[in-house]
Image (tube, rainbow, N blue to C red; front, top):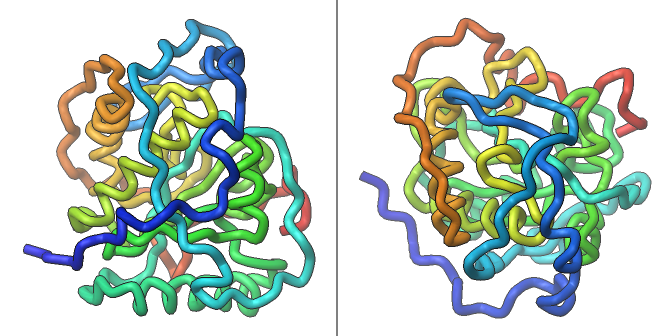
Length: 275
């Protein structure tokens, strides 16, 4: 049983601008773009019912900035793009560390950035947000906090051919057979609830796994089976009624798993801009 340290939830939020920054109330009632089924989602066009307005606002998590975790300068600045219509859950394909400290979380972000820049040849970290196994939430790609504070997004490198309309959250660890620690799970629920509230998205349709777009095992067979529960808990955090299907058993999907450290599957495709 893991017992990570308590989070600094009482700390002031990272500089995301005033609480009212982001989409106005009209934007919060947007058309849905997907219908959730079983443990995953069938991706559809922008048609369907509007999302019920949240019964209460979601609590904004503390997001450690790039300056706080010691990021390298990117080789080029990220491009701010439109708000995402889907929030992608990834596993990082890194080891399942039992070091739940903030020091480890910061090193994790630096290691990820080094891998993405030095090995993949990208301009910066690929994903917009990272959550450590200790539950610490960190800014990923440069300008992510700035963009989210404006109700927008940055062009990332986390889901091939879909980077122009999705926001990616990397969760430290590999979840093929093992589930995330409680601290990571709770931070993921809080972060997704906040993002759904900010962007006016339905947890039932907006929260997807990497494999819902690309041929990959990511976010791992074990974590993917928990997506119905994740959507349900996020909806509950927003005071929305959502009847989740029963959690699917963990079964081996046979989809391609990590071939090397940090390989969570296709991240950049022909339809994407240079990462």
